[in-house]
Length: 206
Figure 1 (cartoon, rainbow, N blue to C red):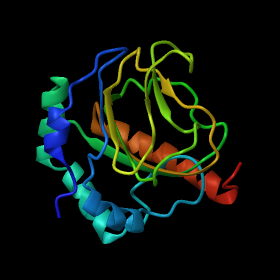
Figure 2: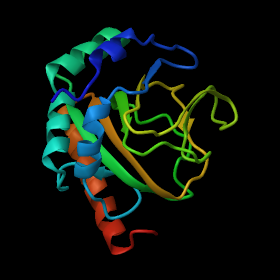
Figure 3: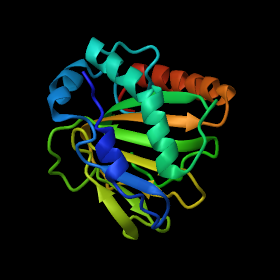
């Protein structure tokens, strides 16, 4: 099964206000969503968890293989006019959200491109909708992205790539993919996430 609608990705214009990003509702094909939602890995609580060490089902593993393949990388390179050859990828997942999550940040300098793909049913809540900000203020936003199933958000990290969301508490499933500067970044991030995940398992809603 082909999970990704690369034609829709290529056809969606790149936005440049307030930084380079693209939002593609329906990027994950509708026919694939039930299998992916079924096979989404279980996580212990809020926070980001490295995909390594989790147990996604077979459809989700195939989905990751397609994301990590050459066709999607080429589409991202074309969209952002960036050379990603030799750049490692890193995958993390979120399953739950605390009210204090969603704080404004730009992502670390070692991240080149961030891709978020959401796996939630239709999103009615006003909280938990990621805002792409013109400044480090939640009310100063250029776009707001409901985390509805199949929606992709991709952006180039910069000193201006502020993003965050209004408070939300409950289930909020998201896959994050990053192209990063070098392999040691992946190892450092995985070590950090493993430590954080271990603490969360001891007290998952801390």
